[in-house]
Length: 149
Image (cartoon, rainbow, N blue to C red):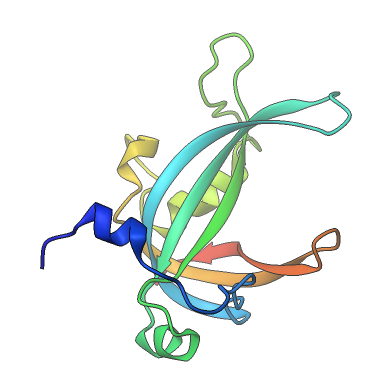
């Protein structure tokens, strides 16, 4: 069936839309990285800033998809990055970029040459936890850590 944009825009919607998404239950799930995106951040008071790597995982659990009523379940992981202040490259010194090292270890890529763009398509087990947004009274699912499959 061909998509008709005009007809789509004119459809009548009956009833209300959902305003909250059911969180993914806390637990461990097999998942595949679907997207990675570096993102600049700054603290609310403006005293610190940096780069975070947003890693989007697609959970590969058919039972979970059925129980949540979704065809696709994604959850995000934030990895804070340490940069070399002189070059702007990742700081590969001892004790630096440990979160990235743990991610690479979980997907089997913590040795040899590596680029962040090679992460999509790689698999690991994600540990999902919940975070409460007190202002919105909403629970968000997020990746707390990653483990090898």
